[in-house]
Image 1 (cartoon, rainbow, N blue to C red):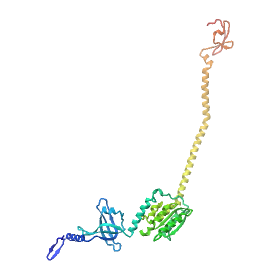
Image 2 (image 1 turned 60 degrees about the vertical axis):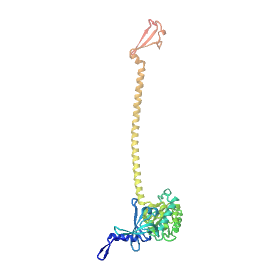
Image 3 (image 1 turned 30 degrees about the vertical axis):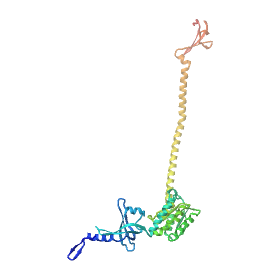
Image 4 (image 1 turned 60 degrees about the horizontal axis):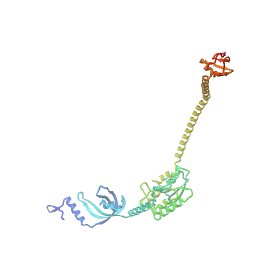
Length: 384
């Protein structure tokens, strides 16, 4: 396919569009090729048909735009991130509208750190399947540790940050320090050994594994299987204070607690003496207030009881008087004299109250008792 051109005199001239199209036709005849570079500006969206990224030469800074079908990219399941070194196979092409050269990627492979990342990801899945990262395994840190074990590098600033931070917050705490190699070949085995050695100390209640920030390669030992398993098997709670906030070595997942920095780890493992003192002062004030309130309530209750005790005899006498008055009124109502007062009389014969006329006869002497005074009488006639 030929690209159209025009002539200006003896000059064959191509339009910009024709020129770009011609370059594109030439590039289409090139075979697929591999390009090595560092992934930057990675952009992926479920709504897009393509994934866009840039390959950068870390030595010269040269950049090459690249695209890849989203489904093909997702099928690789690489979980790529900016900064990873990769090999990309694809075809060179040009975006005719803007004249931009790019690479249409067909496949991507990690190299260098990318290989380490892939291995770490595989180990992460394996250990997670064993339950080493389960939240149920996480243990709480002791509130008042007797001794804190510290695993760190020799002459490391992290060690100073942890110990100085603990002593500033809680001077009574003791520290058992194990210095070891924390980067480079063999560091993982040494870290695991130091952790086991410190955790076996009879008075150590918690262990802090600390290392300051570093490159991805520097922190690789803390993602080694031997280290991760040592964290999971530690007999006392262990705090991971490795790297910076954005660093996530696998030991963080196996630790009982993760601290963003060694200084933050010091704040986690020991209480603050100033806060404890302030808390005790507050509790003392609350206790004092509670005692004062209890005394005031008891005093009020005693005053009420005293008033009631003083009033009780008078109230009892009043109740007894009312009871006597009531009984007297009943007795008064039942008294024969009350009956006599209503106009009745009591007739006695031979000293006994006369209830039946059959008990007397004519001539019998009677005594008649009235409400006021009495009479003596003789029976003249007995009526049945």
